Amino acid sequence: MLCLGIESTAHTLGIGIFSRDKALSNAKRVYKPMNEGIIPRKAADYHSAEFAPLLSESLSQAGVKLSDIDLFAFSQGPGIGQCLRTSCAAAKYLALKYEKPIIGVNHCAAHVEISKLCAGFSDPLVLYVSGGNTQIIVEEKTGARAGSEKAGRGARAGSGTDKGGKARKRYHVLGETLDIGVGNLFDNFGRALGLEYAHGSVLEEIAKSGKYVELPYTVKGMNLLFTGLQTAAEKKLATASKEDVTYSVMETSFAMLTEATERGLCLTKKKEVLVCGGVACNKKLQGMLASMASEQGVKFGVAPNEFNADNGAMIAYAGIAHYSRGKRMKISECKPLPNQRIDGFNF
Ligand code: FE2
Image (cartoon, rainbow, N blue to C red; front, side, top):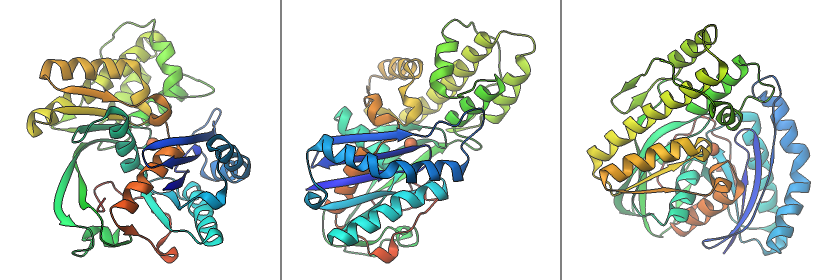
């Protein structure tokens, strides 16, 4: 089965093509806001303008034609409403034009599933870290066969209709941020530093020459808070260098994430720990989690950066997984769900 997946939850427009468990293409364009956060209308305009050339690029990378595609998948949520409309409208148009099935995919679940594939893990504890999301997630097998009973909360979350297929599963969120995502902390702090392009990757470079200065640390069980850390860090810039404060913001937030994840491991006794999402590209965070995993005697895994940053291939892969589990969607069910949660549907 060939699935074309379209990602447009926030800054990235991605179009990827998967054949079973192999990525044939993963083309993307990233909207980079300068001296400001993401302005939804500007990001959506960017996605619309870039869609046609990116589609050609992705098809050409994969060496296939649109008429070869068996399934169209799109990022249904969570995300910025205006941006989500691009992938939803495009997938609907393509599915209707080529008379092929369509599947809406939860963006967070797509991150988890592609990372499991890359790491070769079957049942990990997952730390999902990005700009908008920070969650500690485990899978919960329901034991029911898809199609054998009603979809529960999934029915309200727009998960479509199940038709036969494999046993379904759900995700369970053990802990999460109670205010902003850790990537959002870095973006906000980067703007306080006056960076033209405020992004975690720029902060990672600045932090390399920094030393630790004390900042507040807030973990509540497996939940986390980052806005107090952001405020304190911005105030600290009056008395410490930007390198030292940047290093300390990253060190503190990553230590918080590692502590909460370790607590999740001790509770669940999982034998694998996985980190995914855009912030998972950070080498410091990877190192702290790998060290913790080693102390706990469990395997640590992370996907290549190409699949941690937002991308269309993960939407295509999750689309195939949904379809093979029996999920079907009518065109009338295909609409953006900006607040969709990973624990709000059956997978
Ligand atoms: Fe993401």
